[in-house]
Image 1: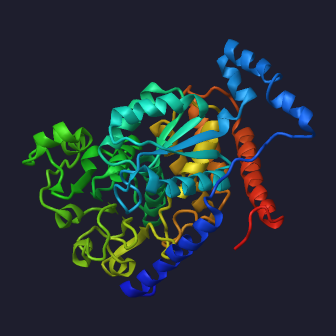
Image 2: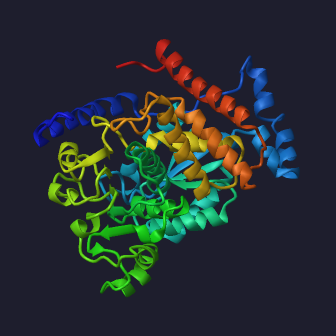
Image 3: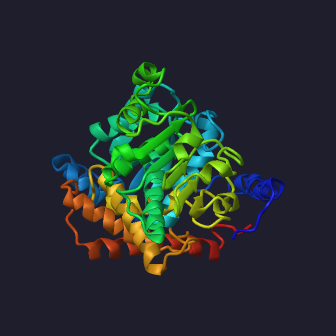
Length: 448
């Protein structure tokens, strides 16, 4: 059983990264930079890379637009785009203050997935203006990663852009969290000997992450009636007093209210949790958001994820004492961390390598199963149901799974074998890591 720690100890530990960040961000003045990837043997080479030689690939692309993937790095460019309206746990701090987060995301893309990602901050809160801005810059990029956008407009933005662009568009707060949580559920249920489509789910919190998780669970085969969802006003059901308001202001939550909760439960968190097999919370940080006595009313051999940061909705030891067999959080200092970084680098790697036109729900479900398989091969236990960041083979493995699903669905521009995708992904990711280490070794990146 995990060692009990006090809130004060956790908060003291949490101060260290913030203190280091305030020293090292100004030391490096950012986390990413642009480096050449072509040889420059002499100044004569600029006649090839720029004028006059560059005119020939330009003309070739004008005749055949698909050749842009051969002549440029478009196929490995991803824009990390945000309006800064829901940044981490900081809320609406605006596009300027959100820039360090998007730079950090770009760093993870490069180091974990070999993807050349760039932060793009959009200075508007209007969703239609935001969509137009993304469409204007889209020709540069092979993919779009939406980040830290307030709910419910994030759903509208994602749906519109997925429909209107011919490159993959992904919202990590929705799809990334859903993918890694589904991976945890798949393996958690294997540990306790239950089946995905036969158990009941309590979903605590109805923001971007959990609304997408519900959609993902249903696509993965869970009967909608087996899901009971709770927002800040209580359990979602068709007879709530605010149902017409939901229909107008948050149609995504309205849809969940109308098609889940076959039992017609009412009430709040305790009523939702009672008698369920799996509980996923992405709501208000704890401790005490979810109480031990409520969790004790879950079915035997329960699986639970409390994903709020910095402190989960309930402490791991309280959940275990209440009878939960498998428990995960969003923190790295407890077992079973639900970590988006296990998902998006590999998902984009596979998507880009086959030049897919979109990322479908089926593709991120394929990623979830791939993530789960990597952990299963290492040996599942109550304290190990998803890979850790050290299990780096998860990234090329899920890249191959995502690519194969894109090819199967007919949305890939390139038809490659699973082995070809795996080897390409493995080589690209290794190169990105080795480049960083080489720059540090030779002093081009100073080590503090």
